[in-house]
Length: 192
Image (cartoon, rainbow, N blue to C red; front, side, top):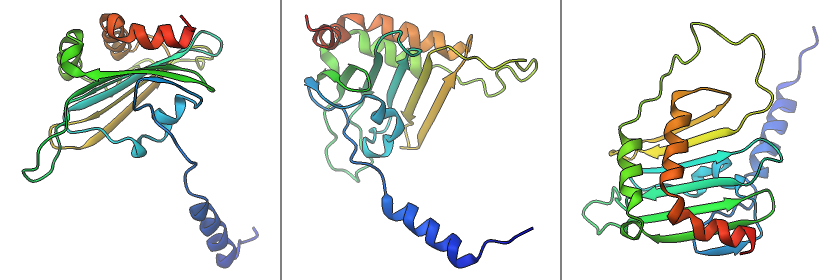
């Protein structure tokens, strides 16, 4: 067995570290822009959530339509007595080239409080499917994303690609309940 010199390993790691993250943009204001919506779920560190907030998305299988992303941000900051930000609702509809966004105060989307409470009460079954593992991989299914920052600002992230996970229904129903608030972003994406 041939060993790799330590200096070569160090050089490789240094080159990876210096490359850094790409110039990532995230949906932050109403309108359409030319950037991929997927950057938000891949590089969440650049778009942190306030405490007690949610970001969730459904990315359909290839060719099955655009990704829908929703942010329910409480505006609560761990900020040692400084004022909190205003709570916001943000919805983005997009693909690998273009993203259309609607952002508004959370109170302007009444369905958001219902979706927020539903998500807040949800649990992630960590043992999903472990008693009867699948014999084959799922090749065509949507990907579900859920990020949340709990009441103590601990960031948590969940991603699921497959079928019949109980949290899929919670996310789907949350997005459905927010359709009237998401509609302006969808209309802009579809060019209506």
